[in-house]
Image (cartoon, rainbow, N blue to C red; front, side, top):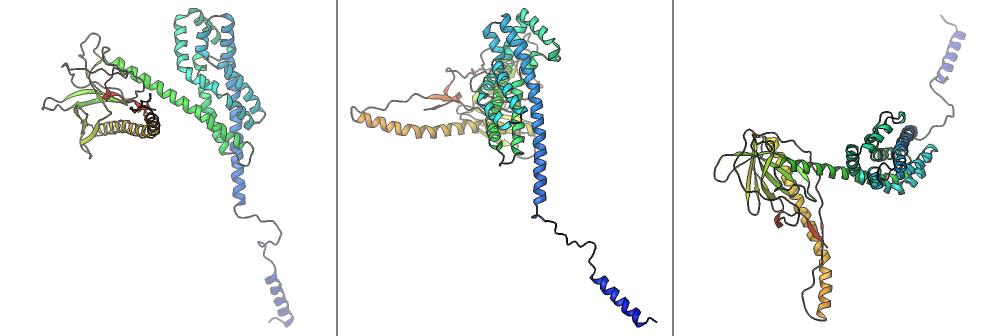
Length: 448
């Protein structure tokens, strides 16, 4: 039995324990920020780390790039100019604007090393025309360089001697010439990363954004030139596949799209025979293989017919479902063509390629005609008003100019030999883009 004094002590102790603050409870006046402030700060720190890495990579690659430009400018351009090994026109055809590019990038490197990125690229972008000149000349430079290496013994010996220097690190001149083009692509990616990881409040944000736009335009020009060059190589390859010179493939404004074997269905129920078809942006060329035992043309084709795509209509006769192959119907103003394939995927690809080429030709003509009407009407009214004041006559026509907008080329496919060769002779049409071409085969449009 507990005494009254003991009970009173226990009640007092329990009351003190009940009012004692918990260890997890804190009454310290620590500041508490708004919700999400810590996440915003972490994101800013992450952006700053990315920006620092990008700046470091940009400066390091710029230093290496300037050293490589210095090798070309010092050991080739300046020494060749002093020795006179190459004529001035040949030297400029090979190296183009390399001295100017090197001078501009030396200034840019100093600014980048000092951390002045915005002002550095602001001063660099007005000199991008040196890069544009170099980009437009690079294909010709490679051609002239290869010709000089082949025919100019003195230059060949000089080139080999310079490339053997330890500074070149076993690099060839052919490896150094594309460097300015590659550097433009690198600038585009570096500047995009910098602008994305730079706060709009920073003074460097606006200069970097302007530089991204200007350098992206030069980058797009590089891609367009590369596409045009690849398309030219494809046209020349197809031209070499055709025997003789009656069928001309290389023409201004013409783009190679695809090629492949298809079977033509004759109108009178004759034998279905495989033919090689070459699809371009404005025409479809049908060819047959030459005899395999021919001494010089065994691996070539003979052009048979050329179908202009300007007024063509493409339809699927069958092959809409997952069947074995399909049949396409091509309707031209003066002919009709039935093409068949046992490959379902192949016939679908041909249908989409043909429909796209025809659609682009028609849409281009429609847009040009609408613009032509808008431009001609006020001019004609003005001329009629002037003529009505003197002697009534028909208004004069305004000379126009041709403009061709090429569609994007598709990935080429290599032809495979058919199961049987076609040996019958047939009429051939001339495939050309010059004035002698028929009106139905032209794809150019006249604009005021």
